[in-house]
Amino acid sequence: MQNVKSIYADNVQVQMDKADINSTICWFCDKIDTEDDKTEIYLQKLLNTNIGLTGNKYEYLVLSRRIPCCRICRRTHENARKWSSILMTLGGIAGLLAGLILPFVIFLNLQITPGKNFNTIVICAIFGGIVSGGILGYLLGRKIAFALAPGTKPETYAGQHPLIEPLMSEGWRIGKPE
Ligand SMILES: [Zn+2]
Image 1 (cartoon, rainbow, N blue to C red):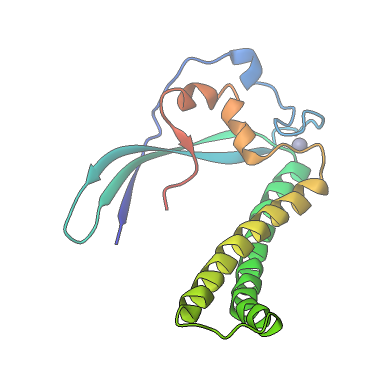
Image 2 (image 1 turned 30 degrees about the vertical axis):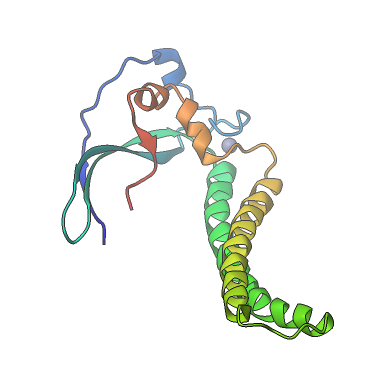
């Protein structure tokens, strides 16, 4: 088991370009004036790892920065998250079924008598099916979300924003600790 503790760090200061920071143009599509509409980007930095008998305990520093983001881009990012997780689950289930059924279909069609390794083959096929189905579903969900809004760049593009980039070069990473 792994434990995660976060410490909120709101007083981190870095050098940045004032002109870029005051822009209200959407960072993710560069087209729409957001009229001060913003999205919150969380950053994390590993502070400490305590190795223990019951599992490792990780301590993170966490902070957030708000950068201009229009409604279309924000909705696209939400859809990408939502659809990729739904399709990842569905892909995993489809992969499980395929992994369960395919070895039997193949063995029956080729008229091979299942040997003593057959159980191992089925288990590997199920495992491989879940993993590959899950990955394919995840990628497909993101692809659909961004296909509907071709001008929107993914959330990770926030890493190049002048408010965020200096933090990234100091070892911060986008995302909340889980
Ligand atoms: Zn936008």
